[in-house]
Image: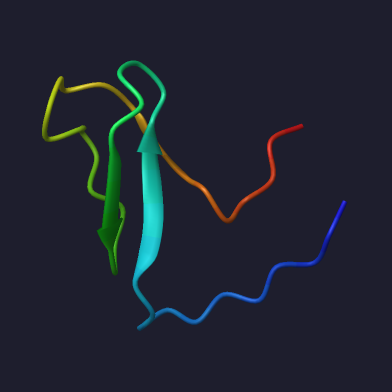
Length: 47
């Protein structure tokens, strides 16, 4: 697993688990603006 440095004021890509839409935002944009699904931070590794 890699170390991820996150800066709170930095824009981060978020991806929807349901439709795959990608949104770049400073804060978690949940729910997905396209389908209402759950979003995840793409810079955080999945286990």
